[in-house]
Image (cartoon, rainbow, N blue to C red; front, side, top):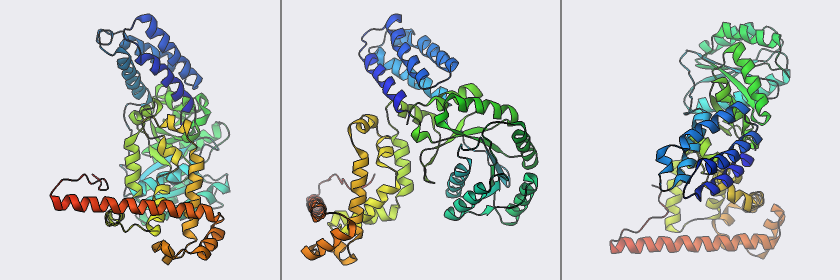
Length: 448
């Protein structure tokens, strides 16, 4: 995410940190590099120019010039201006109606249907009762896709195949929602390969009928400035309330995210960061600025962990670890919990300095190793997972064949697991000893 821009900015920051004293000349040199980095990231020219002018004006202030670490001060100014550029604060949804209506609009291929499902999942987890409405009458595959997503999420989908009148579909969907106590309607509308008048007028009529609290424009982040041009047209026609940027995980530049708010005045409300339904996040400008500047996003990482990990399961696992009763079955459960958090690349990217780790490490290889480990454990019987001592040579050959690995790989896994068990037992004994002595042993396993 924003790899190219992030790398260039961090190179500039290394030079800034070394400045003992600053002058207009060396500030201008550093900000010229920042400006070039923004332009190469496909940020709107005027947006980049105004950003640099604001940073330069603040950087030459007396409090920066006279400070002990002027370079660090300038970096903070860039961070704060970047947050402002991205939208200052998270812009939530207005869901005041009963039912509340959300129009998902955008060009064909931008990810409207998938984003509709992701948004429905998020709202359902927040306690809302969403209804997905298939309002794309031109592409039957969109109706099928939305219906499939609804089944996966166990969220009802209103589909009226054969009906060409979008207004009629909308009226019936509203009646259905009221009759079935669905308090949030998400309309997946039709898109085109380009903006045309018939598309706009159809959306205008739909807006007048359902009077949506939110009109969310779904944009492909990878299209850069072009997505900002699209946003300008849609906003002029429909007065959008915000945007959803999809495929942000594959956007190495970041021009759309950095230009959208400044050009249109409308906030980015959500971002799609992967193909899975859970790869969908509220957009937090400050967190995104920290990611771009290589400072990580630990808050989002903690939130992701809190969502994926069941607290009772975590406490039960902690108790097992402290008692030295950790089994292969538990190890398999931990591997699966880790997978719920997302890819290793996305997790490492949320850590401070994670971009440097990504450059140096082969995380894809590590993920493949995790999958092979999971396959080996799944090839064991329940008794074998609970008691690895049962694994004689014959059983090991069977498990290796069943999981498509060599016996050597299986032996390596078992040896590492045995070492892990021994370490857990030693930690448990140490804590018991400290407890008997009345000491306050640091419980490394207990969550704060």
